[in-house]
Image 1: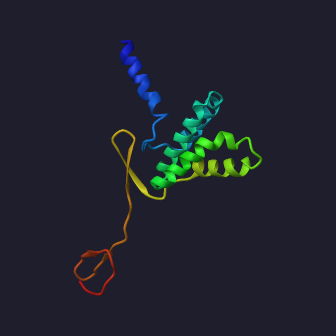
Image 2: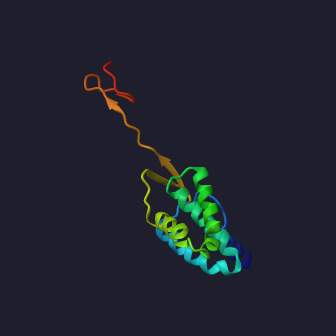
Image 3: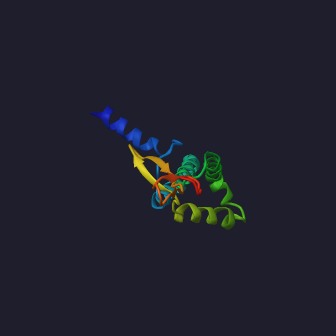
Length: 139
C-alpha cells in the first residue's frame, strides 16, 4: 500500500522538475511560481522556476531554443531580483508568460501532450472545386 502511494507521489512531484512538453496555463504558471518562490530559500525553487518558465514558453508555442532561453531566465530569476534592474528583468517577462495566449489552435492528445496544428491558407477553384496551396489561374 505504501509503495503505491509513494509511486503516485513521486510521479506528481516529478512534473515540477522535468523539462517536458506539459501544457500549463497562465494560472498554473502563477501558482507554480508562488510555490517556487517559497522554495527558493532552500535553492530547490531555482530549478522549479526554470522548469516553470520552460513549460510555459513551450505551452505558448515557442521554439526549442526560445524555451531554453526562458529556462535560463527562470533559473536566474531569484538572483536577478536582488539587483536594481529587477523591475525590468523580472516584471515584464513575468507578465508576458502569465498573460499571453497561444496564437495557434491546439489539440490535446493523451496525458498533457500537445499537438500543434498550424492553419495553412488554401485557395479553391470556383470552376472545378479543387484546392491548392498557391493561387493560380489554372485548374
